[in-house]
Image (cartoon, rainbow, N blue to C red):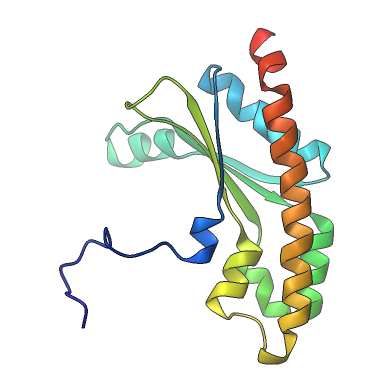
Length: 161
């Protein structure tokens, strides 16, 4: 039986969170956001929106938080395949990558949790679509591995510009 006051510190992360992509860049935050955005776009992701959460929170609540941006991206093949499984899965899209700083270190963090793995792990797809969902997760993984490899490979060059 779980304790209602449990903060979750003792729970294991769900597979989606456990398999999240994370890297740290040694560049200025304001340079990192467009750099990460461009690496997604070079892998054929479309930028849906770039939102600076820190600015939104400060503007609307008057509170300062560490710099954090969300890159909301969508890949046409992922979108096509998700809605081919079930159109309601469009509500789980698009993919989002967070770019943020912390007071704990000097790096800029880049973090991505897979929307398609969330679809899988939350059981959002029809029960008879397991194979199609597995293919969608695999395709998304391949595309994001390409993005991540390029972010890590090109970060030093981008920081020097």
